[in-house]
Image (cartoon, rainbow, N blue to C red; front, side, top):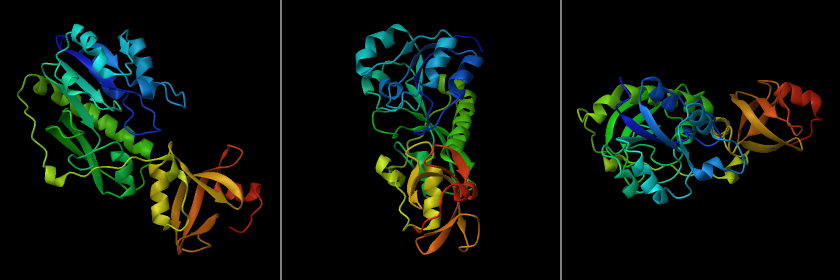
Length: 300
Protein backbone atom coordinates (compact mmCIF):
# COMPACT_ATOMS: atom_id res chain seq x y z
CA UNK A 1 0.00 0.00 0.00
CA UNK A 2 1.07 3.58 -0.49
CA UNK A 3 1.27 6.31 2.08
CA UNK A 4 -2.14 7.67 1.05
CA UNK A 5 -3.80 6.91 4.37
CA UNK A 6 -2.77 9.40 7.03
CA UNK A 7 -3.32 8.39 10.65
CA UNK A 8 -2.72 9.74 14.13
CA UNK A 9 -1.66 7.16 16.70
CA UNK A 10 -3.01 7.51 20.24
CA UNK A 11 -1.67 5.52 23.17
CA UNK A 12 1.36 3.87 24.65
CA UNK A 13 0.60 0.18 23.82
CA UNK A 14 0.97 -0.80 27.49
CA UNK A 15 -2.18 -2.88 27.78
CA UNK A 16 -1.79 -3.29 31.53
CA UNK A 17 -0.06 -1.45 34.36
CA UNK A 18 3.52 -2.52 35.02
CA UNK A 19 4.22 -4.08 31.61
CA UNK A 20 6.62 -3.06 28.87
CA UNK A 21 6.09 -3.16 25.11
CA UNK A 22 7.89 -3.25 21.78
CA UNK A 23 5.05 -1.23 20.17
CA UNK A 24 4.09 -3.79 17.49
CA UNK A 25 1.00 -1.83 16.43
CA UNK A 26 2.79 1.40 15.60
CA UNK A 27 5.70 -0.52 14.10
CA UNK A 28 3.33 -2.56 11.94
CA UNK A 29 1.47 0.50 10.66
CA UNK A 30 4.75 2.15 9.69
CA UNK A 31 6.05 -1.04 8.04
CA UNK A 32 3.03 -1.49 5.75
CA UNK A 33 3.17 2.13 4.65
CA UNK A 34 0.64 4.17 6.61
CA UNK A 35 1.58 7.80 7.04
CA UNK A 36 1.66 8.36 10.80
CA UNK A 37 1.18 12.10 11.14
CA UNK A 38 1.70 12.18 14.91
CA UNK A 39 1.88 10.05 18.05
CA UNK A 40 -0.23 11.25 20.98
CA UNK A 41 0.82 9.69 24.29
CA UNK A 42 -0.70 10.12 27.71
CA UNK A 43 0.96 12.93 29.66
CA UNK A 44 0.28 11.29 33.04
CA UNK A 45 1.61 7.91 31.94
CA UNK A 46 4.71 9.52 30.48
CA UNK A 47 5.49 11.25 33.74
CA UNK A 48 4.60 8.45 36.15
CA UNK A 49 6.15 8.25 39.58
CA UNK A 50 8.31 5.37 38.42
CA UNK A 51 9.82 7.67 35.77
CA UNK A 52 9.73 4.75 33.35
CA UNK A 53 9.88 6.40 29.95
CA UNK A 54 7.25 5.30 27.44
CA UNK A 55 8.65 3.07 24.71
CA UNK A 56 6.31 4.76 22.24
CA UNK A 57 8.22 8.03 22.73
CA UNK A 58 11.46 6.42 21.60
CA UNK A 59 9.82 4.85 18.55
CA UNK A 60 8.29 8.16 17.51
CA UNK A 61 11.67 9.85 17.69
CA UNK A 62 13.41 7.09 15.74
CA UNK A 63 10.91 7.51 12.89
CA UNK A 64 10.83 11.33 13.09
CA UNK A 65 7.14 11.35 13.97
CA UNK A 66 5.88 14.38 15.91
CA UNK A 67 5.18 13.41 19.53
CA UNK A 68 2.41 15.10 21.51
CA UNK A 69 2.08 14.72 25.29
CA UNK A 70 -1.00 16.79 26.08
CA UNK A 71 -2.21 17.08 29.66
CA UNK A 72 -5.65 17.79 28.16
CA UNK A 73 -6.65 16.24 24.83
CA UNK A 74 -9.39 18.81 24.32
CA UNK A 75 -6.77 21.53 24.21
CA UNK A 76 -5.03 19.93 21.22
CA UNK A 77 -8.02 19.96 18.84
CA UNK A 78 -6.66 22.68 16.57
CA UNK A 79 -3.24 21.02 16.41
CA UNK A 80 -4.74 17.61 15.64
CA UNK A 81 -6.92 19.09 12.89
CA UNK A 82 -3.85 20.60 11.22
CA UNK A 83 -2.41 17.13 10.59
CA UNK A 84 -5.26 16.27 8.23
CA UNK A 85 -5.45 12.63 9.31
CA UNK A 86 -8.22 10.41 7.97
CA UNK A 87 -8.49 8.32 11.14
CA UNK A 88 -7.00 7.71 14.53
CA UNK A 89 -5.74 4.41 15.92
CA UNK A 90 -5.76 3.99 19.69
CA UNK A 91 -3.99 1.36 21.79
CA UNK A 92 -4.04 1.84 25.57
CA UNK A 93 -4.14 5.61 25.78
CA UNK A 94 -4.96 5.47 29.50
CA UNK A 95 -7.63 8.19 29.55
CA UNK A 96 -11.04 8.98 28.09
CA UNK A 97 -10.91 10.61 24.65
CA UNK A 98 -13.52 13.40 24.37
CA UNK A 99 -16.20 13.08 21.71
CA UNK A 100 -15.17 16.33 20.03
CA UNK A 101 -11.68 14.87 19.49
CA UNK A 102 -13.09 11.63 18.08
CA UNK A 103 -15.23 13.63 15.68
CA UNK A 104 -12.18 15.40 14.24
CA UNK A 105 -11.48 12.31 12.11
CA UNK A 106 -13.63 11.46 9.07
CA UNK A 107 -13.27 7.74 9.83
CA UNK A 108 -13.24 8.13 13.59
CA UNK A 109 -10.77 6.42 15.94
CA UNK A 110 -10.24 2.65 15.82
CA UNK A 111 -9.40 1.13 19.21
CA UNK A 112 -7.68 -2.16 20.03
CA UNK A 113 -9.20 -3.47 23.27
CA UNK A 114 -7.70 -6.59 24.95
CA UNK A 115 -10.92 -8.49 25.64
CA UNK A 116 -13.89 -10.01 23.87
CA UNK A 117 -16.21 -7.07 24.30
CA UNK A 118 -18.65 -6.50 25.88
CA UNK A 119 -16.89 -8.68 28.48
CA UNK A 120 -14.13 -7.04 30.52
CA UNK A 121 -14.69 -3.40 29.72
CA UNK A 122 -12.56 -1.00 31.72
CA UNK A 123 -8.92 -0.60 32.69
CA UNK A 124 -7.95 -4.10 33.88
CA UNK A 125 -9.20 -6.68 31.33
CA UNK A 126 -5.92 -8.62 31.34
CA UNK A 127 -5.58 -8.80 35.11
CA UNK A 128 -9.26 -9.71 35.49
CA UNK A 129 -9.04 -12.58 32.99
CA UNK A 130 -6.12 -14.02 34.99
CA UNK A 131 -7.77 -13.49 38.39
CA UNK A 132 -10.98 -15.15 37.24
CA UNK A 133 -9.17 -18.09 35.69
CA UNK A 134 -10.91 -17.44 32.36
CA UNK A 135 -10.42 -20.23 29.79
CA UNK A 136 -10.21 -17.66 27.00
CA UNK A 137 -10.04 -13.96 26.29
CA UNK A 138 -9.21 -12.08 23.12
CA UNK A 139 -8.97 -8.81 21.23
CA UNK A 140 -11.67 -6.52 19.81
CA UNK A 141 -11.29 -3.85 17.13
CA UNK A 142 -13.79 -1.21 18.18
CA UNK A 143 -15.05 2.12 16.90
CA UNK A 144 -14.22 4.53 19.70
CA UNK A 145 -17.13 6.38 21.31
CA UNK A 146 -17.34 8.72 24.29
CA UNK A 147 -18.60 5.98 26.65
CA UNK A 148 -15.93 3.65 28.02
CA UNK A 149 -15.37 0.62 25.74
CA UNK A 150 -18.97 0.78 24.50
CA UNK A 151 -18.43 1.37 20.78
CA UNK A 152 -19.51 -1.02 18.01
CA UNK A 153 -17.06 -3.81 17.20
CA UNK A 154 -15.57 -4.43 13.74
CA UNK A 155 -13.97 -7.81 14.42
CA UNK A 156 -12.70 -9.98 17.28
CA UNK A 157 -10.16 -12.77 17.73
CA UNK A 158 -10.25 -15.28 20.58
CA UNK A 159 -7.16 -16.33 22.51
CA UNK A 160 -7.16 -19.55 24.54
CA UNK A 161 -5.57 -19.36 27.99
CA UNK A 162 -3.50 -22.08 29.67
CA UNK A 163 -3.99 -20.78 33.21
CA UNK A 164 -0.26 -20.17 33.62
CA UNK A 165 0.16 -16.80 31.88
CA UNK A 166 1.70 -13.86 33.71
CA UNK A 167 0.37 -10.37 33.08
CA UNK A 168 3.35 -9.51 30.87
CA UNK A 169 3.05 -12.71 28.84
CA UNK A 170 -0.66 -12.24 28.23
CA UNK A 171 -0.25 -8.55 27.43
CA UNK A 172 2.45 -9.38 24.86
CA UNK A 173 0.29 -12.04 23.27
CA UNK A 174 -2.84 -9.91 23.08
CA UNK A 175 -0.91 -6.90 21.79
CA UNK A 176 0.63 -8.92 18.95
CA UNK A 177 -2.78 -10.44 18.15
CA UNK A 178 -4.36 -6.99 18.15
CA UNK A 179 -1.67 -5.47 15.96
CA UNK A 180 -2.03 -8.25 13.37
CA UNK A 181 -5.83 -7.96 13.48
CA UNK A 182 -5.66 -4.21 12.91
CA UNK A 183 -3.20 -4.40 10.01
CA UNK A 184 -5.36 -7.07 8.35
CA UNK A 185 -8.68 -5.24 8.74
CA UNK A 186 -7.79 -1.54 8.64
CA UNK A 187 -8.07 -1.20 4.83
CA UNK A 188 -11.66 -2.46 4.83
CA UNK A 189 -12.51 -0.31 7.86
CA UNK A 190 -11.21 2.81 6.13
CA UNK A 191 -13.04 2.11 2.86
CA UNK A 192 -16.28 1.40 4.76
CA UNK A 193 -16.62 -2.17 3.48
CA UNK A 194 -16.33 -3.54 7.03
CA UNK A 195 -19.11 -2.19 9.21
CA UNK A 196 -19.04 -2.46 13.02
CA UNK A 197 -21.70 -4.32 15.03
CA UNK A 198 -23.20 -2.79 18.19
CA UNK A 199 -22.30 -4.49 21.46
CA UNK A 200 -24.92 -6.38 23.47
CA UNK A 201 -25.24 -4.13 26.52
CA UNK A 202 -26.97 -6.88 28.51
CA UNK A 203 -23.74 -8.90 28.42
CA UNK A 204 -21.40 -6.08 29.48
CA UNK A 205 -19.08 -6.56 32.45
CA UNK A 206 -16.87 -3.86 33.95
CA UNK A 207 -13.42 -4.54 35.39
CA UNK A 208 -12.34 -2.90 38.63
CA UNK A 209 -9.28 -0.74 39.08
CA UNK A 210 -6.38 -2.34 40.95
CA UNK A 211 -4.85 -0.42 43.85
CA UNK A 212 -1.56 -0.68 45.72
CA UNK A 213 -3.46 -2.08 48.70
CA UNK A 214 -4.08 -5.26 46.74
CA UNK A 215 -0.36 -5.99 46.66
CA UNK A 216 -0.51 -7.20 50.28
CA UNK A 217 -0.94 -10.97 50.32
CA UNK A 218 -3.76 -12.35 52.43
CA UNK A 219 -2.47 -15.72 53.64
CA UNK A 220 -6.04 -16.70 54.53
CA UNK A 221 -6.88 -16.94 50.84
CA UNK A 222 -6.63 -20.26 49.03
CA UNK A 223 -3.37 -21.18 47.25
CA UNK A 224 -5.24 -20.98 43.94
CA UNK A 225 -6.31 -17.37 44.62
CA UNK A 226 -2.81 -16.30 45.63
CA UNK A 227 -1.25 -18.04 42.62
CA UNK A 228 -3.56 -16.10 40.28
CA UNK A 229 -2.80 -12.83 42.08
CA UNK A 230 0.96 -13.37 41.73
CA UNK A 231 0.54 -13.73 37.96
CA UNK A 232 -2.01 -10.91 37.61
CA UNK A 233 -0.15 -8.41 39.81
CA UNK A 234 3.33 -9.06 38.38
CA UNK A 235 5.09 -5.78 37.57
CA UNK A 236 2.50 -3.74 39.50
CA UNK A 237 1.30 -3.69 42.23
CA UNK A 238 3.23 -6.97 42.86
CA UNK A 239 2.46 -9.51 45.59
CA UNK A 240 4.08 -8.55 48.88
CA UNK A 241 4.06 -10.42 52.15
CA UNK A 242 5.89 -11.31 55.32
CA UNK A 243 7.76 -14.62 55.22
CA UNK A 244 9.52 -15.83 58.35
CA UNK A 245 9.83 -12.25 59.52
CA UNK A 246 11.15 -11.00 56.18
CA UNK A 247 9.35 -8.70 53.73
CA UNK A 248 9.36 -10.37 50.30
CA UNK A 249 7.73 -10.12 46.86
CA UNK A 250 6.44 -13.38 45.43
CA UNK A 251 7.15 -13.80 41.71
CA UNK A 252 6.37 -17.47 41.06
CA UNK A 253 4.28 -19.90 43.12
CA UNK A 254 2.26 -23.07 42.66
CA UNK A 255 -0.50 -24.91 44.48
CA UNK A 256 1.05 -27.72 46.56
CA UNK A 257 -0.64 -30.92 47.72
CA UNK A 258 0.98 -31.15 51.16
CA UNK A 259 3.49 -29.47 53.48
CA UNK A 260 6.32 -31.64 52.13
CA UNK A 261 5.38 -31.11 48.47
CA UNK A 262 8.27 -28.82 47.57
CA UNK A 263 11.18 -26.89 49.06
CA UNK A 264 9.43 -23.83 50.52
CA UNK A 265 5.82 -24.74 51.26
CA UNK A 266 3.62 -22.63 53.53
CA UNK A 267 0.03 -22.75 54.75
CA UNK A 268 -2.43 -20.70 52.73
CA UNK A 269 -6.01 -20.83 53.95
CA UNK A 270 -6.48 -24.51 54.79
CA UNK A 271 -4.18 -25.72 51.99
CA UNK A 272 -0.57 -25.43 50.87
CA UNK A 273 1.36 -23.10 48.58
CA UNK A 274 4.88 -23.64 47.26
CA UNK A 275 6.96 -20.51 46.73
CA UNK A 276 9.17 -21.19 43.72
CA UNK A 277 10.70 -17.72 43.31
CA UNK A 278 10.70 -14.45 45.20
CA UNK A 279 12.47 -11.15 45.62
CA UNK A 280 14.24 -11.15 48.97
CA UNK A 281 14.65 -8.10 51.27
CA UNK A 282 18.05 -7.57 49.62
CA UNK A 283 16.30 -6.96 46.29
CA UNK A 284 17.75 -10.13 44.81
CA UNK A 285 15.52 -12.56 42.94
CA UNK A 286 16.03 -16.11 44.19
CA UNK A 287 14.41 -19.52 44.39
CA UNK A 288 12.43 -20.59 47.43
CA UNK A 289 15.16 -23.10 48.26
CA UNK A 290 17.87 -20.40 48.16
CA UNK A 291 15.73 -18.18 50.38
CA UNK A 292 15.54 -20.94 52.99
CA UNK A 293 19.31 -21.35 52.88
CA UNK A 294 20.02 -17.64 53.06
CA UNK A 295 17.48 -16.53 55.66
CA UNK A 296 16.91 -18.09 59.06
CA UNK A 297 13.61 -19.89 59.14
CA UNK A 298 11.17 -18.60 61.75
CA UNK A 299 7.58 -19.68 62.40
CA UNK A 300 5.02 -17.67 60.43
